[in-house]
Amino acid sequence: MMQEQETILKAEELKRSYYIGKKPLEVLKGVSLEVRSGESVSIMGASGSGKSTLLHVLGGLDNPASGKVYFQSQSVYEMSGMRRARFRAQNVGFVFQAYHLLPELDILENVCLPAMALPGREDVSQQAVQLLEEVGLGERIDHRPQELSGGEQQRVALARALINEPDIIFADEPTGNLDSKTGDKVLHYLFQLVLSRGHTLVLVTHNKSVAERCERRLVLEDGLLGR
Ligand code: ADP
Ligand code: MG
Image 1 (tube, rainbow, N blue to C red):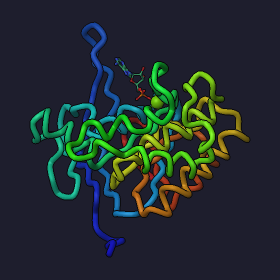
Image 2: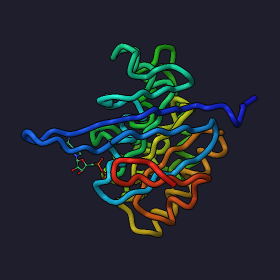
Image 3: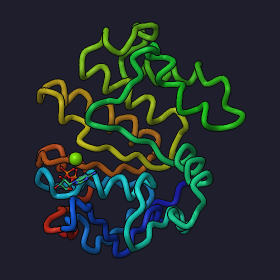
Image 4: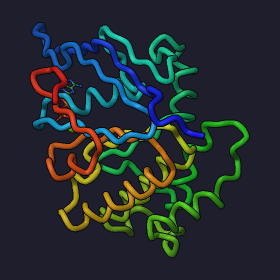
């Protein structure tokens, strides 16, 4: 049984700067956050406010300069690089603004790809077909990404993010490249899949109406997270 109130993700005082020449650009100035298992949280902020930087740090993709990220009380950046990669494959799903599908693979192969990082998960094609059916693309499994529209490609990316049944999904402006009608359809599938399976969702957007679909809304401004 799932415990709704359990903390799944905890960030403490995250700091991250970029260095261009000598002058540091402070992007995260001490971000703290707690996410409970099964909840959906949006992080809104202007373009350039550090949303992608924060999501990458939270998802184990980018070391913070200081501060800690705990996933189910494991300290993510105290793991070795290899363990962290395994941890990500098992526990984390990512959806990016630009889909990031591999053009030389058909969409079924694209969805199966993250399973290859895990032992004992050689044959997930049945599960991948099921996920593609759930996002309305069951008839398209042997198509290449470039034969699909942007919204369809993002639905493939959703299926790919879910193939390893991760506990938490990070979505970075998942509708940022789409018109509002197509974006709404992608969000419909995103929330349907995430909620029906009890995944936790952290969604980053600059769009208020997208943010409002989440149970809890936070704002990233001047390097800090507020309400
Ligand atoms: P957002 O996703 O909110 O648009 P980002 O996290 O992408 O913001 O970027 C935050 C700030 O950091 C921006 O000013 C951006 O130009 C800068 N930035 C992002 N990545 C790099 C990088 N690799 N090198 C230098 N500056 C970067
Ligand atoms: Mg961004």
